[in-house]
Length: 218
Image 1 (cartoon, rainbow, N blue to C red):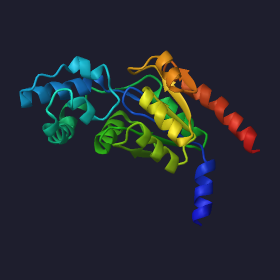
Image 2: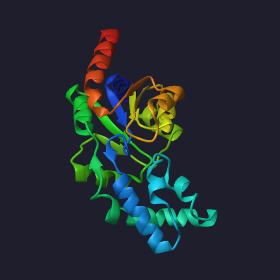
Image 3: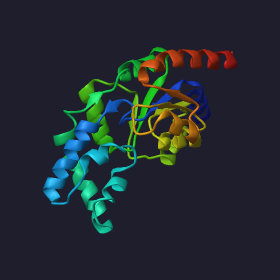
């Protein structure tokens, strides 16, 4: 039975998506959360600079503003306060809903694999009416690849070179979108197989990809 299950997973179309700046424009919400954090802690934080380089875990960003021995506790505080500041201002990026639905319309699984704290990722998706089949949080770069591999993902879509590295670990096709901090040249240099301006182009690309995959397995 276990062998049959893994066989089925590997052949079912499974597409992973990053969250921040791939599916959602979380910059207004994250900026608000960092402004609040600065006010609460008395530590100056350039929130505009923070949102210009989204992608890595919050601990990586906080290390730029807080002493090393305060980062972990501050990250916990940030995650706890995050829903009060960051959910309402955040919007879906162009094509996000259609991209998820394009996977599901082909009988596939759309999964979100993100560095964001999983409960907060789920709040964003629920608030925006985005309905992936699975959400996996708290993973970054190569760590994302481990989850993608376990889920049998053939494709991973993201905006950051860390997402490209995750796709590579999983042996998945890396689809880069230029809606985040990394431009097309950076994504290609990191090894992205495909680069799209945004997710509006994804359903058409996916149709072609799945037709080619079907031809190989028929």
